Image 1 (cartoon, rainbow, N blue to C red):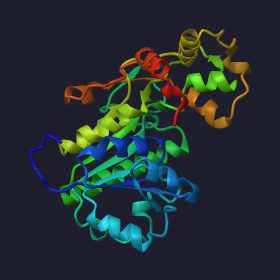
Image 2: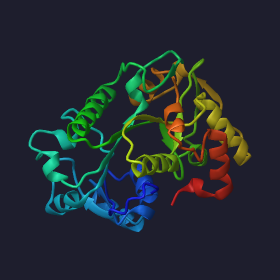
Image 3: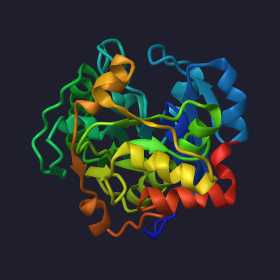
Length: 299
């Protein structure tokens, strides 16, 4: 991966879900082994089909198989949300990490741009002071700090990837339009950043390959109103977009509504300056590729 070293790379992804699987695929060409955990037995076959050695992990008990995988792990990606008890790797009762992961050379921690809170549509960067609003974002900040402190104490690079709204094959506006769930909720001046899942995988492999740590916003170049994304997908499909619904009168889950309580434009300049190039720098390029290739349907 460009660092000139030939030491074997053994990758472990804790929580190999949608993003974790994309990261596994990005690491695979350079790795001797890629192991991924899931909490659901029915997902084991799907991970295996994606070229990932699957293991069950519920976030609590570390099985003998997982302990063995951890012993050989050189590159760890942590994608499991912390929850109220904190990050699974730092919870009471979990053995010390340096004992579990004696060969660790790099950590990628998947966080969220939610840690910045609301900035009234203003730009934020990795230097922006954090003011998380939701409980889940407060927990993310604690977990970020636990990993960064752990890396600093052992001299291991820890990259915190703060992810924008994730979409890609099987999870996008085309699917929503086809399934009749797409909506154009309009809140004046509201914007969101988003990130194509393959760019998350590529960014993680890029940082790991260079042994880079630090905090990086992993997001596209162009924050935009969510209703515009739906309209663009409808245009590509040649269908009528759903009607605009004012935010005030829209029926939404409290989780969905909470996202609209935060309005900001997230900069990806740090990751670009490090030399990373996004394959999908904005939603128009990305939607056009998903539609033309037919990959929007997912596997």
